[in-house]
Image (cartoon, rainbow, N blue to C red; front, side):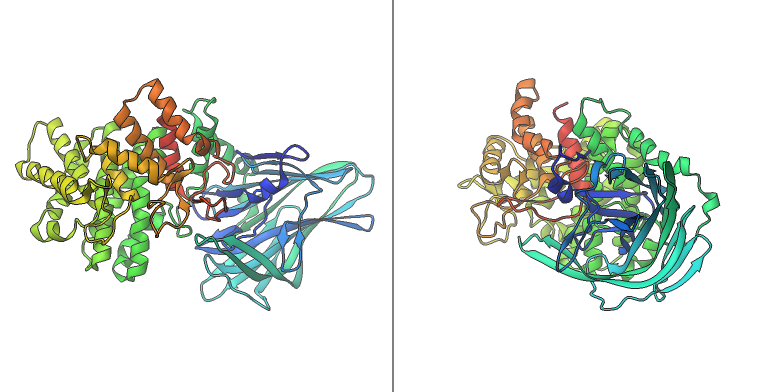
Length: 605
């Protein structure tokens, strides 16, 4: 996990780090490593995709002087606390600032399962005079992806005995509740204009957004001279009673969670420990952030609304479900969480059954079939750990028999990804039948059909590549052809695997991930994805055999990527890189990339 000490580490690096934290239930925040919210999806408190609390500013008034601790960029200047910041420990969610005879630290945590963010302040006043300490929340109401510029912000507000209740949106019943145990709430009505948010998008272009932030008031307290004082500020989307909170539990929660995440990981595997912590500290189970296993997919409400989703939303949901099942191995199984893996895939299958009732367009139908086949691959990984075949065999058989129906077999298998997944799923099913001493002649025939389809229709011998789609006019090396080598069962034989892997190495591989299409293609966009590296290394080790020598050679292919863990994303790896050296701004909540990094790491243990 990233740590910073003044005059030892690079402050600019800390500003680049993506730092995220969640309570695994209701709320989370994402900022830079210095708590700068410079990107439009950054914020310190997020509910249902909305940033409600952009950031907080702390000030000290000492003998007429004011010291401000803030990390804000505006359209005219950058305001930071570099000269005061002495220590950051993102594993402990700890930040420390020093003003000579006056210093303080703050820690972040959550009240588990209550949707309450807590900031603990420890203030050491070595002066003889008292100091006035203020915590100023900067409030917004922002769609997660769509910035809204507001020239005026005024929210309905009612003060309470220990803070304030602010109505952010009456229409959507979005509220922000602010409370403190010992600090007094002082109402205000002010606006901070022109706060700047910027990012480099996947087109390698800089996007800049501006927004105004409301200052509805602040907490304040007098800190006595020659004393050490602890103060707390709490933020939630609902009203709560401070008397019900056990602060000792609040700040033990994250430490306990981190220990639980790494209890079976050797201390010498530092990167793997960081990845394990990032998996649990970014496991958002609500309707907030893409590529996370939301609870909404697995409750009755989602079942009720799925039929009313428009095609765009349904496509996004299917993409996210694909990422969920693809994350099973690295997210759960390598950490011996077989029960959680089983619950997840069985819940996914329930959603698959619901989607089957819908009338889907051809593009959606293809994605839906890819979801079903990745589900079978995930099931197979679980069966390697726990052989409860009866839980899954009927669902696997049902999917396969549906896909081999004449109308489906004739129209569904136009891409190499779905065709490779289908052959792999058939081999998984036949292997399961072997375990239980059974056979299925009809499916055995299909195995030969799909193997011939891949080797005779998709394989281009002259280029040593697979077509991405059978109907494409011009073919280039593509990421989907990797799956013919890297799934549970290989899909090609003879000399094809070696030739295919050689093309992948020459045209798709980089030390930080794989391109999705050949660098020689006019469609190559300069972007690289670490999430494919585990498939690439698995294909290498499958062909060379797993020996210490082959593992060492493979490790050298990914050494720079593994060393990059925590460099730009706290405890994890960036979802996307640019081969041109430009830092792409993504979200650090990408569970699939981190799960695949875990899988990659285990190949060398």
